[in-house]
Length: 160
Image (cartoon, rainbow, N blue to C red; front, side, top):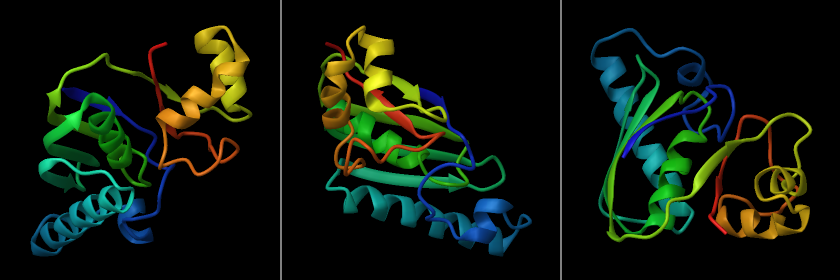
């Protein structure tokens, strides 16, 4: 549990251009926009084949923060759900209020920089460029190919 920082201008475009750029002023319009954004992120999580008991995603446009609640089956699923919440254009922080049914080792996170490849990231974190496939597998289904990473994207780095 805790707060994770993300790059606001990187990620899936789920919130619509206006809300990703600037949230609406406080009031009923902002409340509706926040509910719609939370639902869009929750639907994105489910479209990735991820789920948790009691999954609830809330978005606060004023602070650009997503709060995720629920109980994931395992640590890997929880971490993927949190990444789905944060790798959305317009989101700066994810408040992880989730828990897991089955505890296991936690992954670390890496924010992709311009020019990075999974091989280079693997060399940096594991000391072996050939272990890139472990990073790719740890980030499926959000990654469809090892070549489709982008600057600002946060990735799970599983323990060896």
